[in-house]
Image (cartoon, rainbow over all chains, first blue to last red; front, side, top):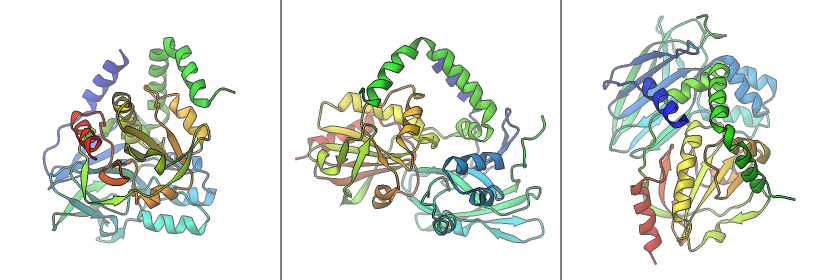
Length: 186
Length: 198
């Protein structure tokens, strides 16, 4: 019976997605937003994460409070990157940036940068953040946090890039917003 | 003293009657309390089944790790068997999703020259013990603890889950980054072919 319940739940949460088209979804339970695009063999999805959720994640891994607050003050997205092609694909988060309405660019803070900072604080933990760069073979995918230091209320475009069998591609997801400080009012 | 894995099996039998009701309550609680995670669970991509062959097989790095009952395991214990090595953590949604398929695969092939190990990253056995109690399927293959992620570094694991298929001579032959349905017939076909090698 539970299997059927979960199946029906999943059925209602699956969405068809046209190539190259950004789909924005609002989670009906939380009100939080997510954006998904599948273009030229690379599928990318960003999901708003509340600062309190980020605090809970790193608090549970026994990070010192100042390190927890540091990352909770970033704009953090749950991120799913998928090789949807039948070829080898690679990406580098260091090549991605947030573009503000005033034309100012903000680089994403990569896993490598976070781990370097954490090492200096004596933290050995190195998981949860989306790998800074990866080569995906067919069927490979990854999930983790992406982070960028931005004012919560300011929308931005994410400019991201990938390489598919030697050819570079650039994508854009417009009008992304950080999660609010607290759950939105229903 | 009973082993933790046996305590778990007993506890699971006792809880069987309340399983559906308990799971439903857990699911609803999960939705209400962790909206960020729920967003993740709802939108996760379907698990594939493709394992990618390495163009040049490499020696699987050795390890010496303990399971929940503090039994020691090293790579040489599995020499002569095809070995599925899975790197995972409890907080990782695709890791949770693929684990039941690893158990089904293990049950199907454990009597041939094949076994599975799941190497947990950076979590303590008590935490993992509590988590395993929530899984629909009990893993009966060894769950090992890489408390400082040294073994995952040696295997060059960038993200979780990552899984390797090691041949009978200890060479890494296949890799999968991200969750998979490991009991898919295509995966079984690859494993049978490796088992058949000299």
